[in-house]
Image (cartoon, rainbow, N blue to C red; front, top):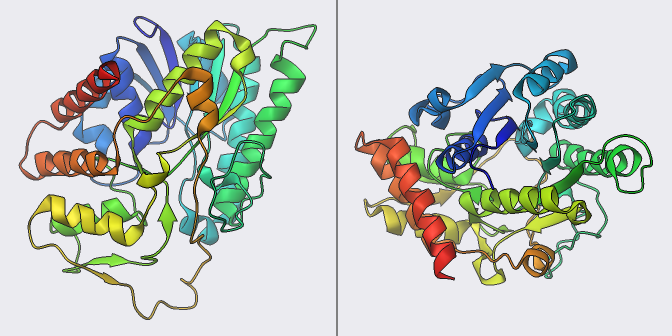
Length: 361
């Protein structure tokens, strides 16, 4: 499907964007990316040499004119929208910027799609946090109420509603005039994997401590008992590829999809950190953050699970790597980085392993 296919990615310089570029290049696609320059230092985009294999257009998702130009120039048939302000705690510090990027960025992307005749399939990547969180035991399903609590989650809920409106108003099979474009949203759980150096994320904090990049000797955990649907980054990325492919072939598959691990792989932050420490095997230890100032004490959900039955039943799509395997592969990449190994080669090996594991199923 993806060999020689023209694909456009917003936010391609980020952690997930860099992995998606690597996967698509491995599959033989022709990739154009539109994004800001990488923010963290170090960053996976640079470490893995992604730029040499894709066409990068550096711009702001809030700039509709530049986005229009880049998408039309790419002649892409498939679009993955990943550009975002992705951090909960940052959204409390800069709520206006968060809404500008995550809400108007979605509007701009969909407007650009309206103005680009080549596009046939779009996947808007949001988050598992779009739901009104009632801290319940069972996982949320796609038609549960959208009402994210914090500015980040809420802006992504808005992005979901905007996408649904554009799909109905401009691109659906029921629209009598204009082009039909398949558009879906993908609500993925918390992703982990090698090459993430973002702030306020637990695996990057683990890795920085393991690599001696933190001033703290111990890994610091804010909320050790919070339960999250952790999964390796390749899990949602291959699900995005599946959705984009299937709706490209049949527009009736357009919609919203949860993408999360099996229930037994939803674990606490403390369990995740302990598993990473065990895998790293270098006397790593952790402690709970103490004496957090009032300004830092922001609401974060304690319990969050997804019900991913829809994508599994619709596409017969099952998760492949359990949480132990996800931690193993994550630590493997950071060890490669620590030993000055070939970061891109490590990524491609993991992509190949993931594909082979799919075929074994």
